[in-house]
Image 1 (cartoon, rainbow, N blue to C red):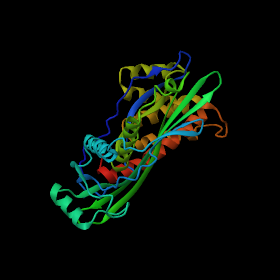
Image 2 (cartoon, rainbow, N blue to C red):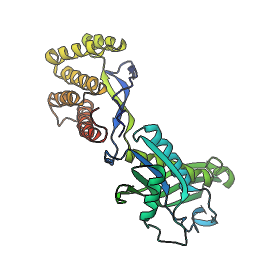
Image 3 (cartoon, helix red, strand yellow):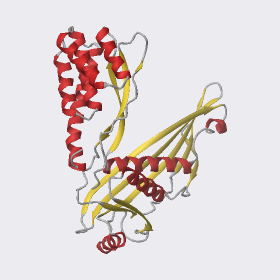
Image 4 (cartoon, helix red, strand yellow):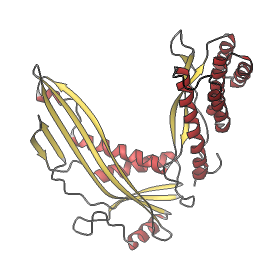
Length: 346
């Protein structure tokens, strides 16, 4: 499996939240592991459509004050094609697998087989030979629904909501022995709302059924790629920049992107400062190590901040933040072990 992921953190220079605030807020990217650890011998995959077009007698529903006024029974889009296209593009952009293909054929017909029937061994063998891959990622079943609800309010106003829901069922087949490596069920809903002085104006800013179906399909496709491959995620951290001259001097070094000099000052504060200053200095050191990818030292300094609290039962803003951040760091330490499992040494 390609080992090109690196701990490159994107620093956004601290910006003071308010002139009287004791801390600034910085953002950087952290690498999050995939939910499922794909075996390291799986270096290439092909995405295929092995789903049946479900009977969509009530796919698109419109209600006004709970009374159904219209049911559109026609299909809106080729939902599986949208899902596979987005998933293929996202997997390619992650560069987690060496090669990603998207097959455009349908392998299950309405008149044949059951809805959740697996790919047959000869189909698996044919696909693996055709694309020269190690595994098949198959959308084996799906369902989507679109619900528009319009409620009449007082003063001749209408309030409209749109819920687009979908369920995707995936299987991952291993080419070497035609076995099912993993099964995964997804389901989610996305929402819109709008209002107006008439029925028509109240739905003017809602998407049409086709766009909504594409939106929920694309969303689930991206989430499925997170299930298979590591991804970058933006995090926000506090950096204490006020309180005494030492914190301000350290902030000056940070403005020059010299974290090493700032760390020296925070270490001094931790050894010689007041109880509150110790906690803040330890938090800053934890952030500095975290953004540099040194999770072990980040956890160490997060714990130093935690144990420096004089009264851990005190529900002050600082105490709550220390406990929240320390928990996040311990989660990141577990995630790093999972990343090593998925990517090798990073």
